[in-house]
Length: 250
Image 1 (tube, rainbow, N blue to C red):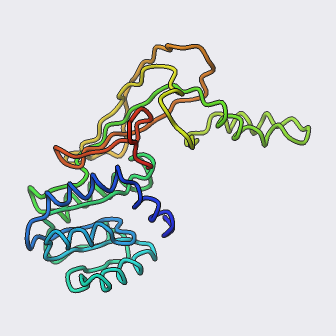
Image 2 (image 1 turned 90 degrees about the vertical axis):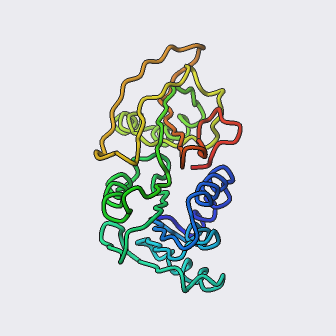
Image 3 (image 1 turned 90 degrees about the horizontal axis):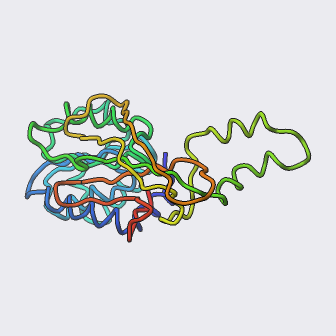
């Protein structure tokens, strides 16, 4: 569950918010029905109303939905938004939606129950031919040299004069290190795409792929950096690619 502060951080991410706003603007037609999965403080639900949606179902299991409900009332949209505190997989609307919008992926598309939730919503909550936002994600990977991050994660196991090789073996093999400051200079090899996820057809939450790297500069490789490009519709997307001129913060 995200805190309200974290949601605020996400809402200041121009790359993400500009892309989602534009995709939603194109998708919403006057009087249409929208389902917002993982609404948080309700920013996408409010935008859908601003663009003319007649009914919005805003779903989230966390208490952040209290903020969303108050924001809807404060901005004059309370009569058009139905708030559901719970999981989308446990909700059935009175009618299927014309547009479904979500951002459940976190740092990567494999976060939590993201993919099963999208598959379920596509089948049960969206009308045939309805619009899904996002449309697809492409996953990329590259070998990185990230000494500062490596030292930060390893320093605890070098203090106090004890042999903690048992812990360091686990830490070095852990998936999910987060490099705080990322730029193209940390890449040691040309990155490659290893998977693509089409949310209009995806069924299986397990994704596999193969990729080969040719190291192009000297240094110590500390791990594999993974990121994604997303296409929200056929025209609009964003990326947290470290080489992007304006990478998203996700």
